[in-house]
Length: 178
Length: 193
Length: 203
Image (tube, rainbow over all chains, first blue to last red; front, side, top):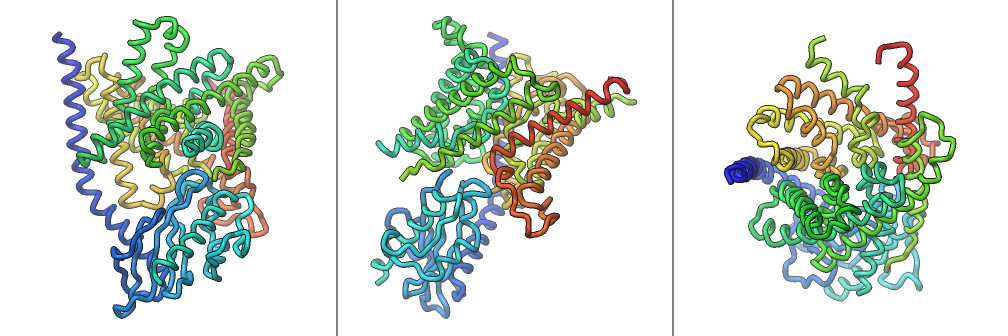
């Protein structure tokens, strides 16, 4: 009995010490991590809605399925566009796409925020060559009728996931905003 | 339902733990020389994967998230896994000594198998619900076992092949694994909706 | 040669964890698609090795043998958590690249192996030397592997373009296949080199 007590108390003490130390580390590091996240988000929003000088989360617009958040892009306090984060089902997991539109629902910028795709293959959805196709006008019609965005060779699953999700988004947000 | 099937196929084939995610390589290289031991190891790993996958999911959702303790994730997960392996070993030794004889000796090795911890972390990253985690764990274990068995089949043949001395054992196994990885990448074309 | 120096040196070549002891395979294969990623993983592992080694060597006589493995694991997992938060705060791009493989350092057999085989039985200075040796040995192996894969895959090493834009890049090097095969070749090469130096020098 004595031995069991000694065993469990040693392990428990180590666990408690570890938990305390880690909570300190967490308390000190987390603010920095959150700030970094925020900075990255702001930079990304600016990238996809370049003409805006300020952003506000649009809580009044209904978020339909697959949308994580919508930000209003403001210039001189007038809404000039929106930035929407939507999710696509990629090869290795979810792909988070940030799409920027102006009030005519034309894409002003697009950025891949997060993905779990294969480096060198599916990860090529981050390449400007692929993404710049979107700013040249995406139609809210099915691929069958108007396939004007090329998928990436060797990254079919990843790129078609992005393409169809963005198409769907443009189609639905058109209805929402107008 | 089709979602669950997709998850299973993704875990077992498309995103195979060994050939795509590089998990469980140490046992994969160590225990894949004979088909019999490969099956035993695979079974043991699958068994532990499912139980620990479910347990860590419960810990994540009912303890870590509820009490706001994200920084305890890694110690908590690995302690749960280590304890589970210990418990499973004791349980099997006592009540199912036949099963213990089959795969019991591999159990202590499984604690440091990155596939187990990797599975627990992936369930959390992919934000699966309970059923999805369960299916994912089964699929992952199945894929791991499959990789092991295929490898063992090939290595059994290699025993009698004239492999140059520097390449014997590990290097040739790695090269074969590379070719198998190439084969498995063919699953990428499985359109999963 | 003083013992701590000997303890340090063995991890660099003779008992190189990745290329001779064949430990820590998962991160070795997973994050060596580029040299800088291999470097980051190596340094993170070095940190956890040394930090855990210090603690475990210091308390080695206080931990009862029966619970030593869970205790070591908790210590290791804690330092991995520290490394995780540190990278997330100050090197967030690298943190993203390392992804799930950073927490997997917890079960990296090198660390638990060294704790069990060395730090739990040796005084502080020797344990630190051993941990450093193993960590640096692991790091250079990863950097080498990463450089080879990056060179053939992208034509660059550490981001510096060595081959011109005419080089289309070898796709297989960026894939799991390239990882397996390159590591296999490297270990075979190590075996060949060690066979050569065996007869001429002392083993």
